[in-house]
Length: 157
Image (cartoon, rainbow, N blue to C red):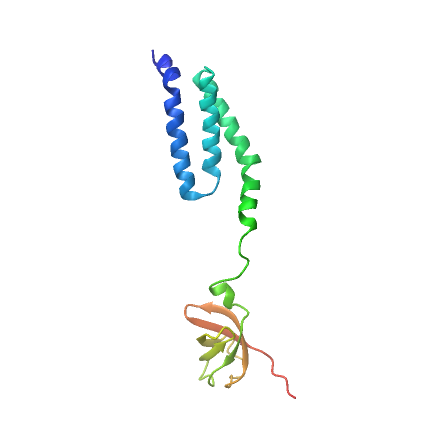
């Protein structure tokens, strides 16, 4: 009786599984659960052709694996192709030039970066000659709210 029940109502299982996979895919947008949902559609179609439940499961599994390895990678490449290559946040500050606003007192001071922002700064190495107002520096790292800077070599005219 249970095998007959499973064969008669397997389509409900497949619809529920497809719905679950589609909901998870909408939340993740990774195409993994979309491929699993499409594999489940294969299991549903196999059930519509009166395949036994184990054959439906086999069709769904094989189809899902094929889609995961054959269709998902090109879809991910196409999705990432139009990405904005512009750096942002801390990545945009690394390598940015700046000008020392006031003489460094010890190892700390302020610099005005090329993007117009004024940052608290400290020297990357302590063995460097103290910086004076107007010296040019380059941001080497960001540590919290402090820019770690390296002086640019001065050229004498």
